[in-house]
Image (cartoon, rainbow, N blue to C red; front, side):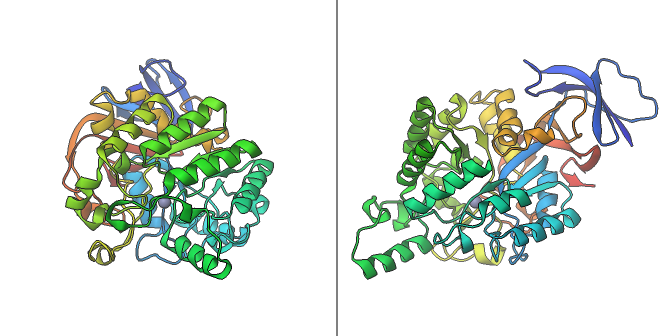
Length: 440
Ligand SMILES: [Zn+2]
């Protein structure tokens, strides 16, 4: 099937500034980019006034399969991604059971081949059962296709283990993306250990002061420790969902010293304060928590000045039943695949916090480079690469209605928000998988 996209404005790192071109797609690849391309046999899309970008990449999603398919599965997660303009995702390994062995990873990738309508990649666990006790077989996981290693939801408490994970990561050429934060699970474990040994632990030396007395407070401390370990081992470390001004500073300083550190921020940490979260309710309960106005401003600045490299949704669906519980009992997480692009365009690009090119880079080529997908052509818009593309209408106004989402999750803190800008075509390997937010 041939597809000819006429007179689209291309926004991609291959061009210094946005430029109008025709793009011809054939055999699943970008065949030609030029002016007035003639291809009478191709179906034609009039893209005048629309923005054509490399297919969007979300490097932090939870699709919950295997084990928690009532929250989301590989099919519905992929539909949500396509509807939101994403052609590639990288999933977290904290499924049930977690993706901590090559066999589990292989099975997951097999299921994804059958169920996902977009490109699905996965991270694998750093430690067996993500329990922070014993390293997973990192080299084999990489060989099987893991794009990074992460114990999502839990930090790696032991400094020695984290150091070893970074050494293995460096040796195997696989990115380490620690979850830089205490979890309830982790804290309990440390407390038990401390009882046994009567020793002070790393975690308990940190302040314990996050809003509502929730024990999720030591982000900056963990980021500092893990960056220092990465510096010593010369490994590449990627910091997930930065939430504090202090963390932005630590990352900026490390980058200045030449540490191989990259970082991501989520739309919710860029747009919602702790105060707003309280008003929204459990649908804004997330981990790390939403913070002060000052933190939000610092993350936006970090994003604009390059301290924070990418935008990722941390799409974390839960069932409506779970999220309807009172604040203290509801699980952590918000969904994001169907709102991220609209939020970024409305609240970061329109007010001039990011240029359109910057925003697109942070959602395409930057995550592709960081997670080693650029070699496959992900994040690029040039002849010869797979035709994964997203066509955007910057003028489209729409209202977020979570009840209509493809995701099984309804835990969207942006429900009812008016957005300005939307993906109107999502193309994977030359095939249109979603149009105007509707999956084909
Ligand atoms: Zn996550």
